[in-house]
Image (tube, rainbow, N blue to C red; front, side, top):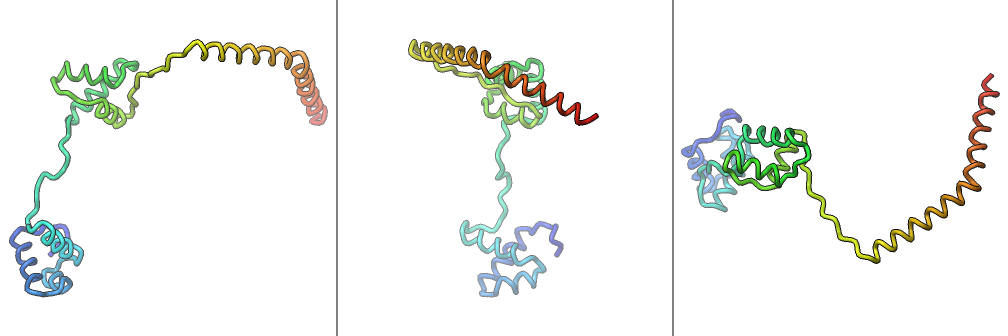
Amino acid sequence: MSSRHRIDDFMRGRIIGKIEEGQKITDVAREFDIAHSVVSWLCKSFKTTGMCSRRHGGGRVRSTMPAEDRYIVLLAKRNRRTTAQQVANQFLAASGKQISQKTVARRLRGGGLYARRPVVCVPLTRQHRTARLQCCREHHIWTECENRTGHAYYSQMRVGSVRHRIVDAN
């Protein structure tokens, strides 16, 4: 039997019957011309579930279809400043389907875009503002001192070294 073909329910029942009779998995696999791993997996799933038939539709249900995914990307491209929640609200108004911000972010990432998230800023207290002002004043004094002493020295050094390189190159 080819490895690309699915095993039908009748064949599965025969395989399980042979194993329950006491035959080894390798012998059963050789008899039915199936890979050892397939027979082993079938035996293991039969022992745990008690069934040997396949269950269909075990995948996750998508909340949006590919055409709707393209529409979500289009909504985001129309206005780059919209947040994921705003795109979700626009999609709800257009299609009547409720989707989450996470879904919008995933669909945009699939389209090569990234969802904007609204920034929540922590309100600053009076102590925060005074500490920041004091730090700025100290930094201002430091830059004035640096400009008076070190800045001119370093600029001369740079000009001198450039002149020196030009002389050496000729």
